[in-house]
Length: 176
Image 1 (cartoon, rainbow, N blue to C red):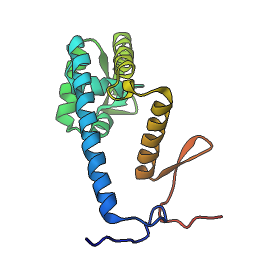
Image 2 (image 1 turned 60 degrees about the vertical axis):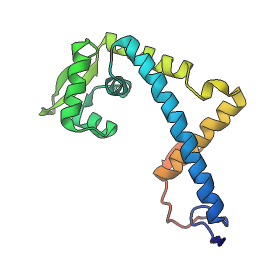
Image 3 (image 1 turned 90 degrees about the vertical axis):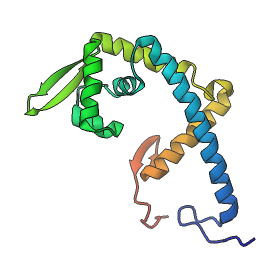
Image 4 (image 1 turned 30 degrees about the vertical axis):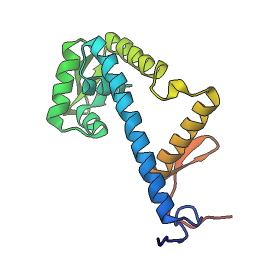
């Protein structure tokens, strides 16, 4: 079996392509299994509220009034689907639609008090009993979260400087 021992562009370390491929496949399978467990937990939580999962996910994105087109972009949804989500959330008294004063064509969704309380309950229910995480001891949880943040930051081209995430240029030369 041939393996490639080329230096990695990202880390400068030598990598065994066959091992990396097998490890990546294992990671993919494990992450997919964890996501399935999390989706099941999320469905259980939202069923108690009478919300479909996409509407609950939209609710958790509403910290402040947000334009419906921006929410759609964040959720990766078509505008018509965001309208359906808004109809569901508004029908349950969780959000109101507002016209953006700076552009009357733009509609924003704003949480109501009931929506804020529901979002807080959703977040607590997810966080308090998150599949996979709940079975780890505190040190393992901390390490897991740190690795997840590192992975996401690296893929987004960010790095942590003094506890803050900053964008970096992965093609820029390192300054010593």
